[in-house]
Image (cartoon, rainbow, N blue to C red; front, side):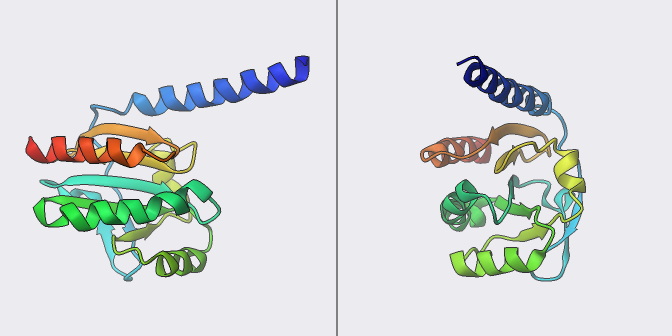
Length: 165
């Protein structure tokens, strides 16, 4: 029983610490970065200034990431033409697995590769997936750690709100 309570306390403290670290980023300018995309071109976050941007950090080994990606793609398809962009940042060491997964899922939003984990460190990513929503001025407005069914409704509300600003 004591071991079980220790594990529960440890898990809680890890989630609490990672949540506090990331929440300090809300309201701050989103750190700029450039990464190679699935199309071969380099994309830079600052090139999207003026748009609402969702940055979704994911990995092929992450079950919730796989579950969430088609829902994110639908959000992207629906709002891309009105100033919304979505950048999927894959953290796998081997981009071939990521390419296979995005083809399998039919993802249309740009996918960037962070094999060296420099951008995920810049954004203090400690869980998978992590979704960061940036406003038109380039400030981090919302951070979501993990994914559970229903989170996409929060994303939708937040994106719509930022698009109206």
